[in-house]
Image 1 (cartoon, rainbow, N blue to C red):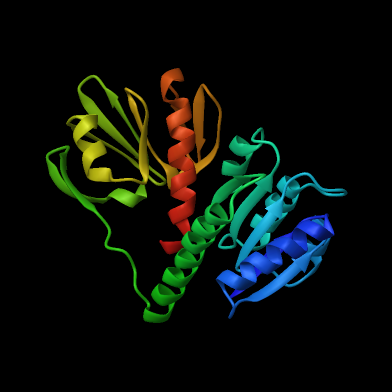
Image 2: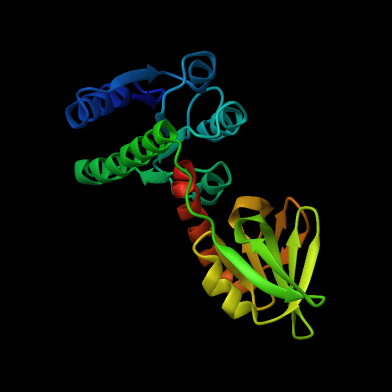
Length: 239
């Protein structure tokens, strides 16, 4: 397991290296003085990444990293909390605000390492998570739908419309019942919309834009959506 530390301040890099080394003495610790060094070097499995650095910023570094490796576990470090929403867009595992305690660092890193180890075990065993199936009646036919293949669902005129990548399926039902069945990878952005977080491409306070279509965002649901999307990204490596 490789744990990377990227910070343009040498003292911070060395301090974090000492703390990480004590927590995980068997880990290979990689040090980077800039975002450019990260992008040009060997990529770690877990990366502690400062945001405000000379040259390319940590946020821009993360965006470029995601194009190369979707599985790398990113933990942002910053003196400001202003970038927390942007961190979600690049699939951050966590966001640490300086100064943070050694206990907090330990807690976050142990969770990140557990995610990495769980992912490795599943990969070795060839395990796949059990997928939820939904049996519905549409057009006089009984249809089995893989819930994870639903991009988003909406309710209209007493019907639930399931928007899949290759088809739309309508049936009489309640969105609330589907929400209970769908599980934690789905979020009710609006009373009429339920979205699959796996298909989110971008979002704002008014709407969520998915790989297919768009779902409205209720103003009062926006902050909770952002929190849930962060938690989804924390789980993503295990799935």
